[in-house]
Length: 252
Ligand SMILES: [Zn+2]
Image (tube, rainbow, N blue to C red; front, top):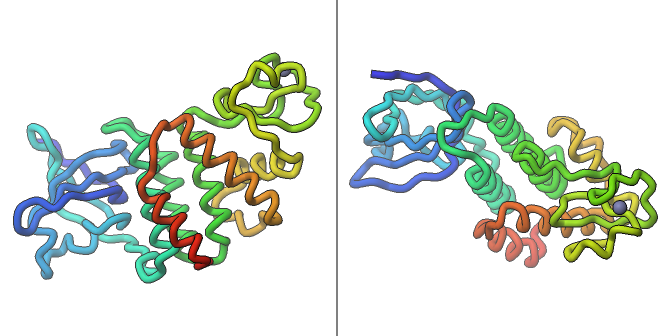
């Protein structure tokens, strides 16, 4: 007979039967859960908006034997501006896919929930360049998941004096000249890129509009983040393929 009230964001859903959905929700208090929303696909359902992808709502959940059931949902934010912009929509789909990949069922992570909520909010708002939001979000998700890049001292020997700037993707941090032969998967980066990664990790999403970077640094950050995420999460994000496709068509 357990009833829970929690804020949550829909990470994905599967249609069930004629009018129901099985929702995967990242909740603020209970981590990721699966919940059935009965009748939510009916046009007059009061759960219609709340059961859409990345909708942010307050859910009242009843825990049955195996699954939760959504008994009530009050929509807080559907992020309308993300739904009528193909590029932003694609980023939002990727962001929820990544949150899904790193979250575990019933393991509470309020940090991840807040990060996703804020990221979707600022992506929809449109004042921060989407590319910057994207890199910062991925770095912060990795940090929350226990993969904070180590940027001060060599990841192998701990030496603080680094000559040249190289990043060991597998070890997740910078390497010194003496240890770089120990690494199989390293990339060269410029000092500016290292500093930018540090700034992206330490700046609140809401303040990312203060971050400036030129194209060279942006491309280095992008390459490093992509390889870092792929290596450690060992997952291919389908949403990224689509995102890259529309970016190649030069929709900025
Ligand atoms: Zn070293």
